[in-house]
Length: 274
Ligand SMILES: [Zn+2]
Image (cartoon, rainbow, N blue to C red; front, top):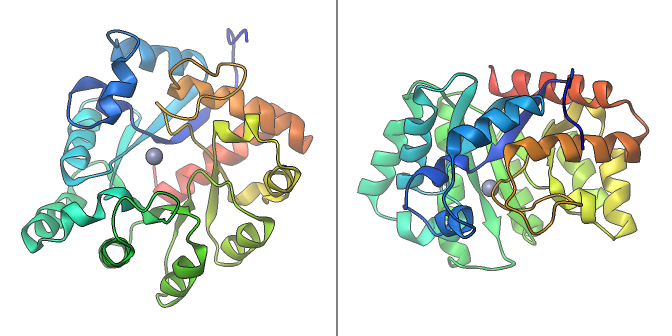
């Protein structure tokens, strides 16, 4: 795609690009499996593609600290602190939770997450996932911050927990679920994060859900380095690929690219207050 002269301004509301700088997690391998990574070049390419703002999302205590450090001196980058459901069982000790909670007031932290429930993999026991999800919801509510939710094959447990609190603001990230769960999220005022998965989705029901998301609830993301959109499968996903997903949604939803860009960027700025 020729991105030169891009007029649209996009917001990557969910990526893990901070992990490219240091060997702290398994995700690092994904960044570096094709050789060394030039982080500044990735950021320059994103800018060139119109991706003017980026949110780096933490998945553990250490990873959240890294995200904060990564965005500190970089303009138009922000951090979310989170404990991914996969990592829940490693954060059950009070000391770890206290250390994590202390990060919430760091400059440029604009959300809590990603957090949630993942019963597709169940890398952590369900009980631990639920405990750590509630901990993060309460932390976010206490500081009036939005939440970034990761929910996979776990909505039956997720909704009763969600509905037991009031005042939750946030986004269902990497949405791939049914129209019904999409509508339930919209009724709760949640935003829906769409990434490269949409570009290679085959299930008509899933495509219908992407079509039906109200524009005022739509957010764009990459989940970089994962989920590279078509036709770039096989390469590492980068924030610049938001433009590809935006283009795909613009065609699918029969809205202009500008319409999608202006709405999703505005939505993200409203949710994250940046
Ligand atoms: Zn993620």
